[in-house]
Length: 468
Image (cartoon, rainbow, N blue to C red):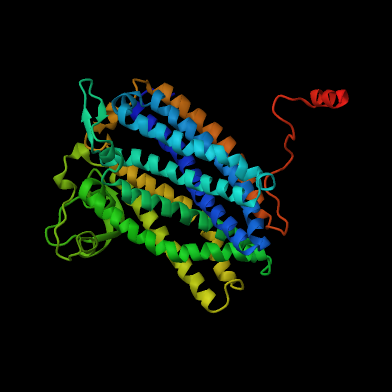
């Protein structure tokens, strides 16, 4: 069926497919875990029941999303051995330890305290339960630290050497971990996770406010979500700008693709708002542009020269159309999120925060925007790095396993079928949970748990009681 196909393209498609499913769940979990810490802290400080009701309401959703993220992440990691064995061999001495550190420091921390957070409030008491919630939130951030560090090293590799077998080995772990793009990408991703979660929380709150403006839980969650959008969206835009300047310094070809600059500009480059990049003809057709604005944004001078892809060997060009459009989707959604935050601030000032159907409908429509922006950002990052897996050092074509296209294509089809079946069911279940408003006395995940030690069956326990 896949005879004549390119095995590299199919392997990339499979990783992109599984990565796209996976990334939305960690982004949601990172933000939601921190949201739990804030809600429980407010409950402990104020004793207002609405905060613990919201905590329990979202806890059930978090449990499902966290499980889906773990499952999709495990499947994704196996592809390093199946489809990308050459990459694993070359980069294993650097990437392998960082992935292991993520498991040892983050995943174990999350797994160790997750059960206490889900089921332990009445068993361990409020204060110890709050510690467990903090540990889960910190664990998600540590996980982001290591994953972003590993991926950032692939984008801006430093602190390494190459041994006699052609493998990358760490010469300076601090330079490997804290590579040039890592701080910018970590801040950008964590803020994206917080905004993604706030948009989902805000959308759910707005959905219920459209039906009943007096629901206390919906009011609180909507207000908190809109504060996050109002305050963090402008910060995210500034962080993205700094990340872009860092990318221009270390990965100029990626920025050229993002901007659609096939040709160099010696006296100020235009900002191309929209157009159709033609890779074969090396130009953007039907371009709508603002003269010299790209130079102002990237170099802070209207007349600053900017190099184009005509200065880069053609075999090292990224796929411009995908990078160009995914970048615009991400940026456009970022400004829409900021617009939502400013609109909510205006309605808050007017005292119409909970009575504005227009604001509520806008918030509902923006619910998925964070997920789409995260996906668009990752597509921009990863396609802009092509044709390399380790930027400038290891080409994608040299990273793939020696597999025939039919083998990769068959597993890709299997992934598509299974993922859509399993994850569609999970998402539908989450949406059903969200469709119900939070109630007074909201309960968390089911408490129908064994009340005996592991390994002691009810019959054995009854026999012991009878003997007494």
